Image (cartoon, rainbow, N blue to C red):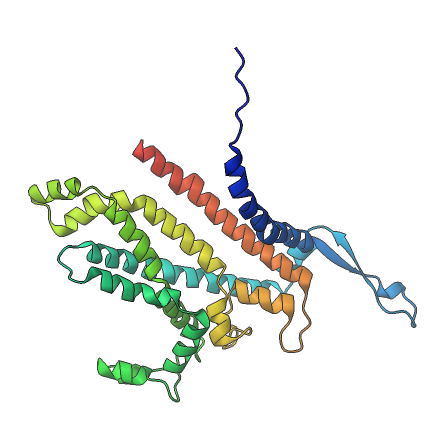
Amino acid sequence: MKRSPRHIPWHIVVFLAPAFMIYTLFMIFPLFDSLRVSLQVPVDVSANATANTTANTMYTFGLGNYRTLFGDPQWAPRLVNALRNNVLFFAVHMLVQNPVGLVLAVLLASRLVVGRAVYRTLLFTPTVLSIVLVGFIWRLILSPLWGISEDMLGFVGLAGQNRPWLGLEQTALVTLSLVSVWQNVGIPMLLFSAAIVGIPDMYLEAARVDGASTWAVFWRIQFPLLLPTVGIVSVLTFVGNFNAFDLIYTTQKALAGPNFSTDILGTFFFRTFFGVQLQPGNPTMGATIAGVMFGIILLGVLLYYFGFQRRLSRVEL
């Protein structure tokens, strides 16, 4: 007996169609068009032109731009520098932001904390602030001329440790990473809080009845049940950090100073595509850098899905 084909309810199509069309127009189409541009290798034919003819540029399709980006001595060091800085930027978020967000979520889930909703709101407030405002305020705070960073360190007895944090190559990137952590720590805190609320109380009560300490309850019960959320927070952090641009641009401008020490893939792409300080823009190489960024993000998401997520699914089964 043949089964009749399954029809998708019309109301689902009606509700999804506008969102799908908008997403396709502003996300999917530009993505594939950018990949197409990255495969356009310019071919200079000016040598064949006469003296009175304007030089023309033609394009052929291939991987020449990627070979130039990875192998040309004018491009490869800049790519390596931006990629290295981006990895450090991501590492600070993974090692500081997410653990702090987890600790805050566990503390705010405790019934012993009075005014948990107020603390949760205060900690999440920086997340909704404009990145331009955040960058401007922290640039003022850390200014060696009129900033209050020296007074803040002096309050805890470390006034002698004050430095021009955004003006030194050794400290600029880490400083901006910590500023980003301060602003965005509310996101993992909120995700972890939602996951903790979903843990049945009977598990925790049973452990406490058996004499488990607070640390044992967290490490043996709560943390294993939070592993799916840890994976989600990690992949969101990875995608967000390898797409980062706005904080660096707001505080250090497109040149990502000092001496490109805060240059990441986002600012490298912007500077190449649009051109900065009389440097002409190079759309094909800019699109090539965007293609590299897309490849890195895609690889990270696939590793999460086929590695961590599937292994976690087998453990749950």
